[in-house]
Length: 148
Image (cartoon, rainbow, N blue to C red; front, side, top):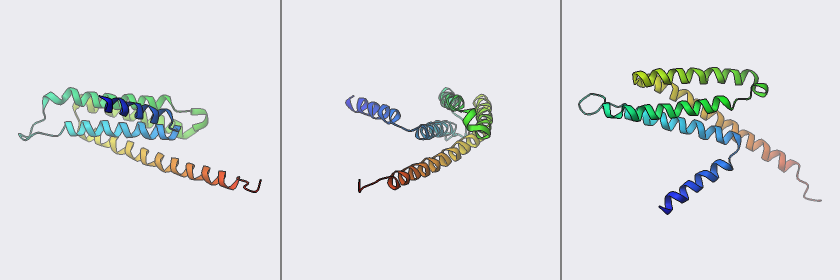
C-alpha cells in the first residue's frame, strides 16, 4: 500500500512541476497508452473471434483517449497559436470523430490511424521541448557574468 501512495505522490509532483510542453507530451503519451490498450483488447483469441467480454474495456480506453483529446482542444490558444492552433483543432476534431466511429464498430484500423498520428505529434512536441530547453540554457549561459 505504501508503494502505491509513493507512486501516486511521485506522479502528482511530476505533473505539478512539468512545463506546459511536458504536460502536452504526457497527455499524448497517455492517449497512445490507452489506444495501445484498446488495440490489445481487440486482438482475436485462439478461436479466431473477438472476445465480447472486452468490449466495455475497449470502450473505456477509447473514451479516455477522447477525453484527453478534448483536454488538448480546450488548451489551444487561438490568438497566439494562429493557423497552427486552428489546424490542431481540426485534427483533434477528426481524432474524436474517428475514435467515436472506431468505438461503435470496434474498428482496429481507425484506432491504429489515430494512434499513429498522436504518436507523431508526441514525437514532434518532444523535439520542440528539447530544442527550447537547449536554447534557454544557452541564453542563460551567455548572459552569465562570472567576473561580477
